Length: 369
Image 1 (cartoon, one colour):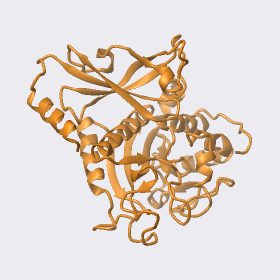
Image 2: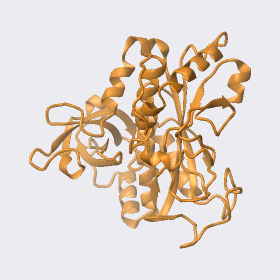
Image 3: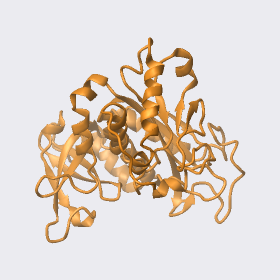
């Protein structure tokens, strides 16, 4: 943690220099390149709901969301979290971004997702999501934390869920991130070291509908802020290191009320998988911030992935596009795991396309990616 951040933190904690009625609201939004941005505003009242914070604006020409001659974009608070850095009563706000005419700005997939989740058929289906976010910690632009410069560590094997120096690299980031997410009210439900050294995973869920995007994006924001305190950075690149190293995904667990039914849930799971298998390309494009191009480096049919060229499913099969967990098969109900989404995906886009295909029964596929 930098000295400046420490001093600021202790000042906020003790209340030094702050009026009793001041609340700092940090507005968080997604730019044109699927990166989080933020800026803060001092308010003279408490913020108990997103609507308590005013709609604000920012320079969209600096985030590739507007032109310089018409640069102001609206940021509208949509979800509220406690601020785990400045502490209560200060807040974090997950925001929607709109153009000057209130059409969704580039990068705003939340608007479309929210409208889909409000449809009657979707509300009745009660879609639940859980997302497993993989990421890598970097100590420089392209240097994974703890790796020898210009070289590699021992091959994969001892790092997954590993314990000890040289195996669990960057645990201080992971632990701090977990506690700050829980303080903020983000639904993080677990963490683990991943297969590649300095690669980790956290899980978000169970979330219903639009909530999955709000909570995952805020968890990403908090993670980047924690890494910043240590002068590290976070990458969600689907294949951060070339060669015989695992990529990074955003495995998405999904179920409906019918899939969770103990009487016929497994048949509903299989029916959903059949629908997903008829639209592989439209899903792959929605599962990657770069319309499938980044994910091609990851989905190669090895290193616990299916090939992007083929659709497959199986029970307990981590080399399949869709995995049915073993316990769901034996219990006859539960959820499916879509293993195709890339680590850099937009969870709003992922949740929306899954719902469109499995609940709203949309058909048709795009050209091969």
